Length: 231
Ligand code: 3SL
Ligand code: MG
Image (cartoon, rainbow, N blue to C red; front, side, top):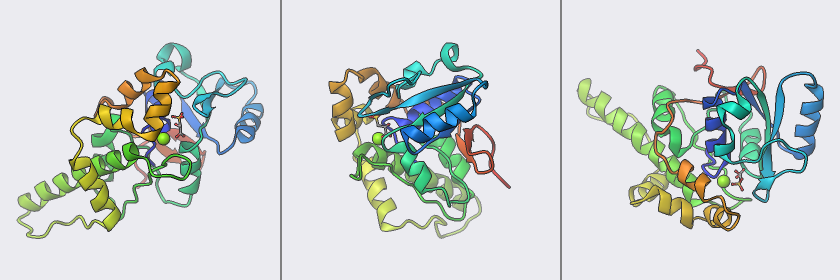
């Protein structure tokens, strides 16, 4: 699942800062309920609606707020406008990982041996967002490069990665990107974040491969953690 602005980026930063896990919730009520159920545990409520922190929540959806000082050792109950809904829609997938520009290479390396990969772009309230498609294109390009290298090593003539039209479009779109920061700033979501004064979040989200981590949903616990790939 890819939601560059900002759910995926924030999840990556939260886990990198030492959060125990993220519990994605589809609605604000579900998040509040989850927090009540876990009363007494070290939990924080995080997320946004219309880009801003939800009333009564501890944190919004700015990756910069998820620092080790604020969240190390805590469980984050998290709900956002698009990202956590996309995670919920993917719930029947065998394996769900969270991708952003910050962790393109780590995610692509992790997915490289999968038989079938669906790159789910969260978009913005039902509309395509350019930044999510560009990140999907970056992951696709990395998977292709990896596969070409393997083919050369094993003297196989055919590239083993087969793309559908959507993946080809994403890759072509990413191929046209000269500045990730510009794509993010110009996008629908990016423009709104700038109006809200979140320029710093866009700059963080634009940093390619700043983190070498792969957040993964554990189906049993419904926690997103840095757990390794299921066998
Ligand atoms: O798309 C989402 O779920 C949010 O990350 C949107 S926002 O960037 O926080 O407005
Ligand atoms: Mg988004």
